[in-house]
Image (cartoon, rainbow, N blue to C red; front, top):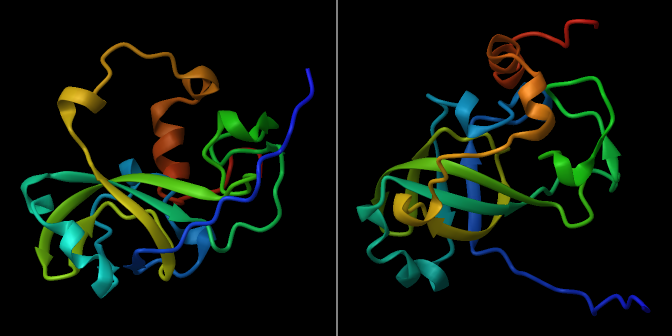
Length: 169
């Protein structure tokens, strides 16, 4: 079977994410470890009507472009381990399509500005889309977590909050 690459897919940002994170190496690696990290999504005026009714949700998924990701790598050492893993088995930013996904708390809205908490995203990141979290659709009770199950909770919390280097460093 012959594999064909489709034409390029082009997206345009709907806004920009503002946070206190300016250095990737000091940014929490997931919203789970970013509690108390506030910020906002500034939606461009032409998309502001799309925010209607969003304030009724407690959490939103943000899809964004990893604008500082660097070159694509198909194997990476994830933040929580010093072992090479396939990039698609991680949430590393150096992906063929550098798209990020974060589930954050929506704390308020004023016009075209969304106020957020739990931001693990660099300041100035282009925002591609927003989707509401709906527990009826998005919650999964029984899961397998792959290699992540090898990482104990204490280590995950320290590394996730960027509190200390890997144990062997």
